[in-house]
Length: 141
Image 1 (cartoon, rainbow, N blue to C red):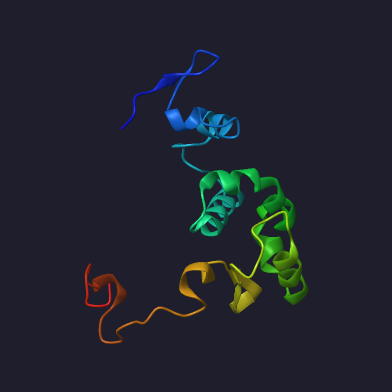
Image 2 (cartoon, rainbow, N blue to C red; image 1 turned 90 degrees about the vertical axis):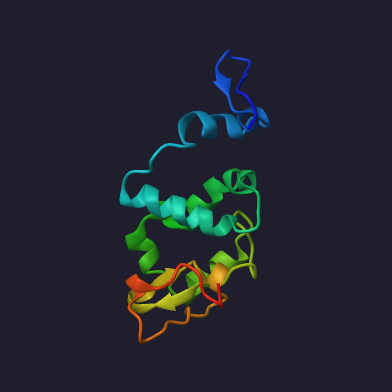
């Protein structure tokens, strides 16, 4: 682990927090801090999903575009997104453009952004074993 370094303002930061101007406010105000509130948590989880395979700085630099595209990450508004919204999102150059991701509908018109990782497949479950008792390791894992 690298030692903290002093920034131009004299504050100590992790070296990555000074690697670009875009990281400094994130490092100082958000990194390592808990997220409170439904909207803030929804934003963080959504951005994490979009980050899959990309650097976090790429997501941070497009965060305002994501906020515009996803109605400020208001879950109630996003839950009402329909097919036209999906097409709008896929064409939006202010966010990570498709076809990298494809939302999959679930009941209540809530879009599951986890399609990024699952390729629109539901994880297999063993009907004979409750989820809470699933082994930590298996031949499939």
